Amino acid sequence: MDRLQAMQVFVSVVDLGSQSAAADHLDLSRPVVSRYLAELEDWVGARLMHRTTRKLSLTAAGSEILPRCRQMLDLTTDMQAAISEPDEAPRGLLRISVSTSFGQAQLADAMAAYVKRYPGVSIDMQMIDRTVNLVDERIDLAIRTSNDLDPNLIARRLTVCRSVICASPAYLEEHPTPQRVEELSQHNCLTHSYFGKSLWHFEQDGEQVSVPVQGNISANEASTLLRATMAGAGIAMLPSYQAGVHIHSGELIRLLPHAEPRQMNMYAVYASRKHMPSTMRSMLDFLVLRFPEEPEWDKGSY
Image 1 (tube, helix red, strand yellow):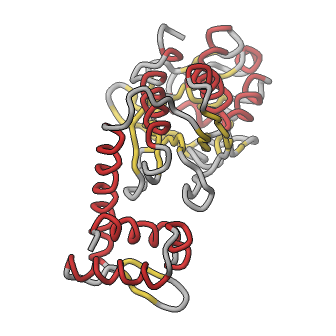
Image 2 (cartoon, helix red, strand yellow):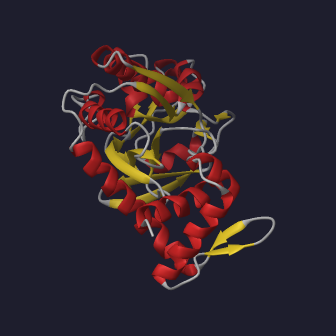
Image 3 (tube, rainbow, N blue to C red):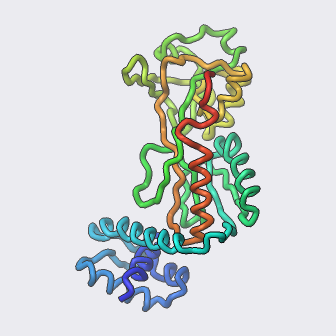
């Protein structure tokens, strides 16, 4: 049995949801796919999937084996990439999913720099403010902000997403400037529909503090909250990669600098390295250098 091929079949069946879909994807017949699955189960000595006419689901053994199969396939791809022609330039199409705010504030400029360096690569940026299914939506790479990633995905950590509390000068002319985070509950706070809708988390004076907030505007992406904040509608918690330039210009005022909103990690996540490995590798290396632990937008004081 070609064990690597069997692992690839198993992973594809899980990712695509059916043996027939995996067969089409791998250009194999349905009986061959079934045989690879059966041989893999014989090799590991356990049933890996529950098979019904309607759906497939992993057994406990299958859930244990799946990430190990992914790791083995990734290692194989790494070995192949390591011996590829050193002068082979990245080329092809990469579909990248990213939030609207990070895409507009940072990634668009980064991708302009990338394609200038690698003109053989085309980038399709999907600005999507929700978690996408990489396989179903044919996304090669997603930029995600999270402290709880799906363990089935391959992730490369990029940087830290820091947030700042800010308001416009016009809002602060009409309302008292909060001195402690607890005072935010007395203000009109503009909130994100998915992150901190009614509770903002801070570290203040070495302690973890959570403050209930409310306001008359919420949105499912940060760019809208930024515009509303600059228009004087209220106080917002915004990512520093987006708000920093407006704080430097004086269009926004940073509040409560002694209180640090909860940080989140930023990752580049992807489902597999098998498609265009040199292009994916070059993109990942580029992103790691472009967005280090202390990114440009966080340098200097606000």
